[in-house]
Length: 474
Image (cartoon, rainbow, N blue to C red):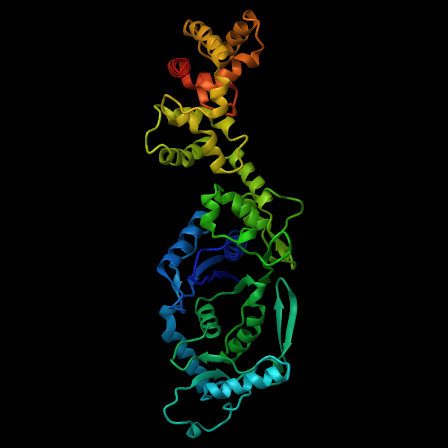
């Protein structure tokens, strides 16, 4: 069987982290069956029937977030709002088959039902008073809602691929509204019609939709359509076990990008947030596609761990191709310095990236540590760097500069030997020379990388130029 999954967000805000994980699971399940099964397709539907809350900016944010995460979808994204007429057709089909009916209840009648249910300590359920009434009894000038004629006896059972068999007595459900009085479709109706028409075979979504699934199964059956497989995945909770909120990191995908996370790292983390493959933590996209199966999705709520995400991101930065990192870092450095970058900055970054990325856990940290490669002379010194370059240190640097200027070879090994020899001949410990060197060359005392390798990267002219800049401050 060809598998068709879908991700169906509402465009009322950003693509949040829980939605991103749902999209990832749907994408992986479709990709797995595309590669290892009878075929797979991943679709995107924008559930924009709530016109007051839906915005074009939110739609763009969803597209942008999905694209950044690398979750490509098949075909054009579907707008639910554009299918309103099709939704109405489905309701007419139900009316014609005797599975739906008009309800003329007034707001006052519904309020009475609600108050009665409250006084009896039960949830509100429509009492079916228009279920079998003759339409001739309809009051004049009242636009009805259309309700599903739901089964009154028995139970509705779902063989959920994550939760197992779940069931509810049909007596616990009422005749739900399909079309509002103004003719607009409800969420329950639109979802079922759209999933059927898009030939969705597997509905993978958060378990907060589990109660909706019972009603939707009844609607599928009333329409005479095949019911898709359901897989309701647990929600994401914060480290304290509470429902995910902004204080836990329930931000939009764009916020994680702005904080310096790589898309492959976020994908890896979200994959493991509720799904497992043995003890594997670092899982490539190809491995994820090969291994992903709903049987390994846990029932328990997953707990978001920002520190773990950051550590995984550090791994992906360390293993990322240096040229790719340079392409990510360079535009941000240009913004930082208003487009005024030092000469040869791209080449320097490529040569120094292997050392720069070893300590960085986010792109922001990487950008910060790479500033000294991009800054034009003379450098702005940190307070600690300025204090390091005291009169004694500058005297030593002045003598060292003369010797470096006469160097016949400019390699890290040769420079290291030369600085060691200078320190010994001056009766100094190496740190007494190396620390001022670092301060003068980078503007800081904590730059990553071997100082002699940095001197080789800068080259003779830039190294001596920066040292002389420091000496001229005296």
